[in-house]
Image (tube, rainbow, N blue to C red; front, side, top):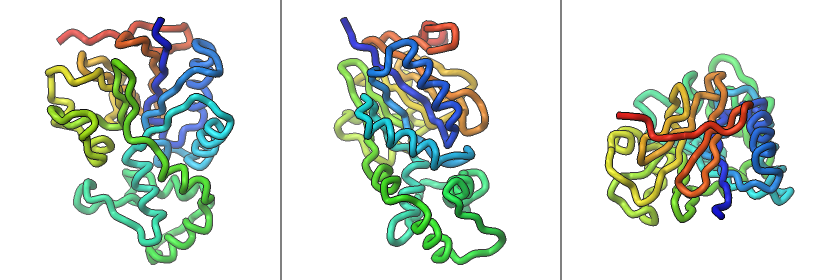
Length: 245
């Protein structure tokens, strides 16, 4: 019998969604269920700090959880380096503290507030003084990919045609178009988030579980047994099947 594995889409600082989803998982599979969180725990939502606290507490309690690295988690981690690092994959004119990306909300959850113009070095110093060392270590230790015999869990996707063990981190946390446009099979069924969709969707070769928790919508959660998947809802499991072309 195949052991169930649960996957949780992007949460973006939404602690209420974390609590709701964890209750659904525990109702379906118990407190010892294996859960893969698909990344993007910070930014946009109101309580990135609280969400990281919950994930760290679960890890330290020995929960069978795998936490993947998302692009927003990496941007936060890079900002907290000794010299803040800019992600070159952002559009020209964008940066982690841009209104559309949510870094301001993340810093606010740690009590770091600022108005108007502020020197980057001053804001950086404020952030380093406010963010616990345990949170910085957690961000640096996030996993890039998790595999089972049938599934590969990543944040954004994979580069088509590249073996899974040769995938680049930049693709795993940022890729979109070439991955989404690929209709052929991948080495395994790819379970990912990163790109918000109206509802969790099975495309045949991949499953997208980012349902927009960063924009106030319900987060996606699914359970897999082998390649077979179900969405978890208040009413129980709902089959997650490839959508018709």
